[in-house]
Amino acid sequence: MRIAAYGDIHGHWLDFRESVLGLHARQPLNLVLQCGDAQPFRDDADLEYMHCPSKYREPGDFWAFHEGIEEFPVPLLFIGGNHETWGFLDQHRDGGQLADNIRFLGRAGCMTMNDVRIAGVSGVFSPKHFDQPHPRPPYATSQRKQATYYNQDDIDRSLACGRADILLLHNWPDLMNAARDASWPSHWTRVGCEYLSLVVESLRPRWVFCGHMHHRAQFRVGSTEIICLSDFHRDPMNAVTVIEA
Ligand SMILES: [Fe+2]
Image (cartoon, rainbow, N blue to C red; front, side):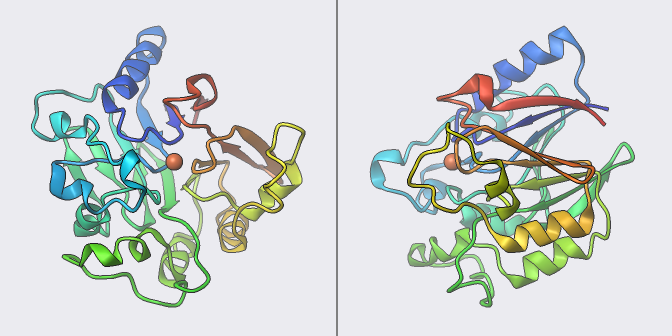
């Protein structure tokens, strides 16, 4: 399977599709993966569920795919980030088809596509909310920040996958601190989360892809290659990688 993995796309679904079409024309892709902050807003009500400053609250292009006006050319599997419409995604907490060729993996878990086992953990870490259940949709927009966090159940569900060929994360595993170089911002004293490192070390995937930090970084631990991808809109060259699985 030839697979392209993308970092955060932040609602730029039409540009994302153009990029996929470009890769697909050069050599056909079987699957596209995306590491969260995809922002699949169907309408203004979905937009209200994104936790972010109001200046970043833009509707994006997903609605056209959801309404069938636009088509995604290759099957896409994505996880959720911290800038999402969790009110909508949580209606598919165990995963679901959101539009033709566009599938959400769910809060956490795994699925097999063409014999390739793909696990994922959506969201980001908050010590305060790690032991709390997710709000149940439909929830008040006042809970939209809490909805962006993964919790112990999500980690347990991903660990229950046993093994995976590919692991999709939004947040970085804290294993990435060993990859620090001069390109990292100095205020990043420590990045990532230990629970995600635990998932990496337990599932021992061949590849891990992560987003969130809008910065490209790569680190190998054992037989696992961790590739953190940048923000597609601002830094497209560092936001995508292609593998043969
Ligand atoms: Fe992001």
